[in-house]
Length: 136
Image (cartoon, rainbow, N blue to C red; front, side, top):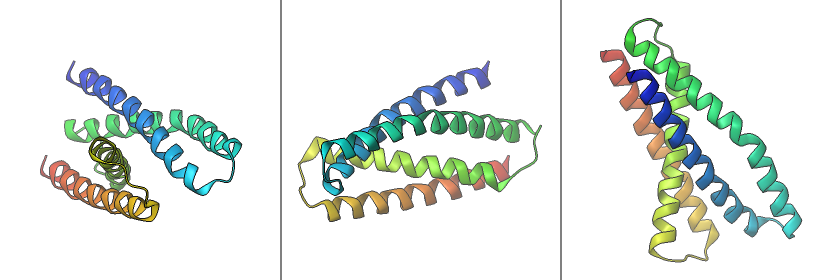
């Protein structure tokens, strides 16, 4: 029962992640692309990538739960995948924070903030999960 609740919450979180990342990629691509058709192409490619993001997220969560149960051996690949998702959630968090507070037109500054937030939250997720999974 616990595993199915965690998987359901993971699916909801990944759907929200894909929804917000679509808007982040569209915002970034409007600055770098020349026409609206290029922006639409980026959006279509991201929509084709979204199921992969969701399925890999569910798979890595399931594997992490099996490591916690003791039925699977500890592996760094699960930790790396989940830290990648932590970094993506960092981008979404900063995007929500920036859009809620003010409008910035300097795209180099925004891209730098996105990169820093991705690196910081991925690093925090990596070491937090590593310590938690090794401890259990």
